[in-house]
Length: 164
Image (cartoon, rainbow, N blue to C red; front, side, top):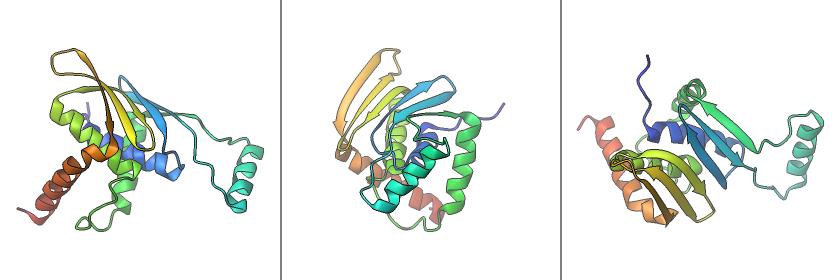
């Protein structure tokens, strides 16, 4: 049996997938060993983007509003994401979906919490989780309130890659 991937890695991989689909506002539910995301891609204002969306609908691809990520999907996304990362010494964009989700995953890990749901809006996030004592907690916070944790975690990753 494979070791469980931590929330920060799982959520970052899901975030990279959501970024590729231009999904920034969504609800994510953890259902055992898989995640379900409900959200819609941002509407682009360019004529070219409208044409692409129209072509997708014609080909019956549609614009997915519900996505499911199982363990194997997440591992595959993680491998793809790792191959695309080139500069670990550069501070990544905090407000990207993948980094926001990675930071939230680390926060949950540090709390010893079990993720139930994340509701991400433009500037806020609501976390629903089971704490280490088995009780359900709900936090609604600004995304910016996680910035110091993000910086701390990035610094720790930088030390690890430098061999400190």
